[in-house]
Amino acid sequence: MNTNTKWIIAVIAAVVIGGGTVALLGNTGSQVSPAIQKVEEGTEDCVIKGNISSSGEKIYHVPSQRYYNQTVITTSKGERWFCNEEEAKKAGWRKSKV
Image (cartoon, rainbow, N blue to C red):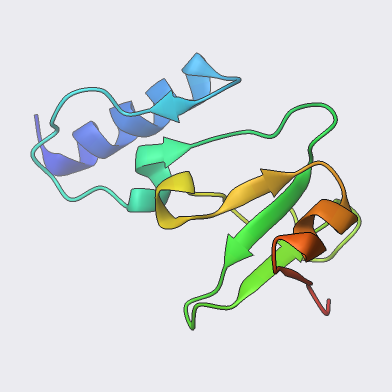
């Protein structure tokens, strides 16, 4: 099985497994992006995404913001979900400017 096939299988597995925590199982023998290795979803009440920028800045995104859908939370990098903006601010995160 070539690397492209392994990558496609991994992505399909992540989509099929669905809700909750999705983790790729087994060693595919190829380099897989950490963002795809573990993706967690917020709960119905906790939909604010706490993202850490490449410069280390803690920024949160609410569903109505421009980059909300593009933002992926990787908890192994310290990123997390918040239930409200006050919780995010108290934890030291700032709201995205866009």
